[in-house]
Length: 270
Image 1: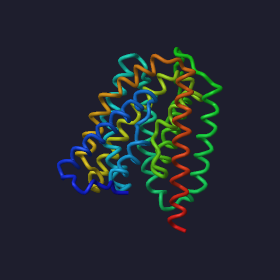
Image 2 (image 1 turned 180 degrees about the vertical axis):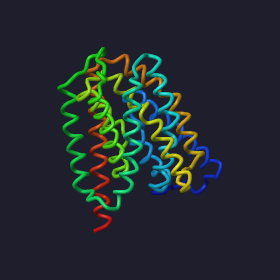
Image 3 (image 1 turned 90 degrees about the vertical axis):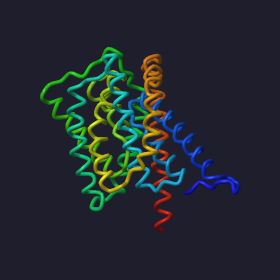
Image 4 (image 1 turned 135 degrees about the vertical axis):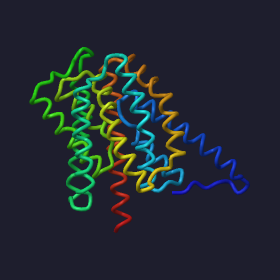
């Protein structure tokens, strides 16, 4: 969908309005990234499409914009002692491998079954976030079995990312809380750390395919870096319960958006 300009609008007006929209988008994405430990792509991609980007260019630009945001967010959480570096590295290894598998399976896998299974997972996660509330002093107990499990979680997250285009934080944050005993802050900080190598890998691949608008990515990414620490301050200020409640609202919104896109795609192909 291409944004329609007023007949009297000049190219300079269009550029100025676009820059303002990109900066506003970056501020919103950065705040969500710092607050929830997610990349922010779930709002960046559809917003860029509303500004006239194709879906492929929007996805590539979003991944590049997420890179500086993830770095700033991970550093911010690390400075407050809320990053598990080993767990983040293990997840990152799995995500990078899983993303390649997901890309390979994209044209070969029955996506409907996977899609509805993932939506079901999101629904269970929303309910669980209201029941299981982590403690701020919870940590991930690392051992050989946990290390293998973290790599597998990373692989599954990468596959889902490659097949469905969903961000890793939506999956990793609740999994770290429920299955690995992380606090909400450690889960978010570790999730952001995990995104850094994945974003680098995806950016390099998209750059080779010319699927990135670097100008737009710069405006969104730099603006997001400014807002990310504000999201962290909010995450630290609210209790784990209200953090879970807010995160459940975000996940519900993601699920609704995915289902809506799925239905539109079916109608278009019908």
